[in-house]
Length: 403
Image (cartoon, rainbow, N blue to C red):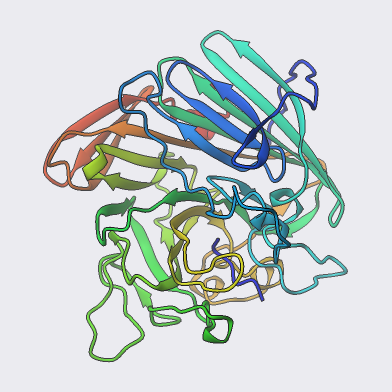
């Protein structure tokens, strides 16, 4: 995971029993499904995985990473979030949270990423299936509700996170983590237009902890394909082709272009050409203004990683890298560039974070994403080779919160 370890109204759903779980890769999980998609949501930490897209076809797709220790005999973990670590989960405060702030000492990625959630209920409304879970926090008191929805006929997951009762500034965001193949450069990464990118300013992977990084700390750049490495005389790293630099774990953050007068989603895509699909995320860039790339390609050798973790986190956030609360509310390398790294929470007004993730099939020769085109209720994925694939996606949800 991407850390160094040293206004809406909730839907009213029918009550459900806590016993409505099943064990999925060693974690008790809630299930939600349509003919097209089935998702599992862990009771501990509300981590979403596995998710099976195109489940009603001969070639279903499961893009999310599940940490390799999940089906092993349980052992003590350095942080609660590592217990269920998998797929996508919401973080509040996002990051390592190594420092205490005003009497608050949060665990890595916050209580909500590693503590027990309660199932509020499930419902079916027209063509929409929804599950809602909730958690009450203690370090900073408040409540967080997550509503995950599937739309009949679509291969997308719509997520609404409602943050209520909190006050003060906090970094937050989604921690979507994809499984990676071993073949170098086989997954193509693209994003909506960027203002700039920056490599983590400090030491992200510490050799004293048997962790190793390849990128130049604190480098600022504007091209994801040209990111400076730490060794003199070596070519820049191309982060549009992953995995890269096997045996290393690195962290970068890319900042989205400021929105135009017309609200448009910002996006990140991962093209798995050999498997014939694109994974995507869509967000409101006024809420989540940047994306943290956690590139963990067998670069950590301490417990529980043991050199076997191979994944990429494409983590849509408003935060200062993965440092946590203290660094994100203080002046930092990104705030000096005019980038907000925390969100002001108002106890009298819920904060809503809306998010969409999904998968589309692609033909041979698609290569990578050049751009996304948005029409009412639809998104067209345009490739660098000129091919076009359209999919029904209710992207308006990002700004309205309504499906």
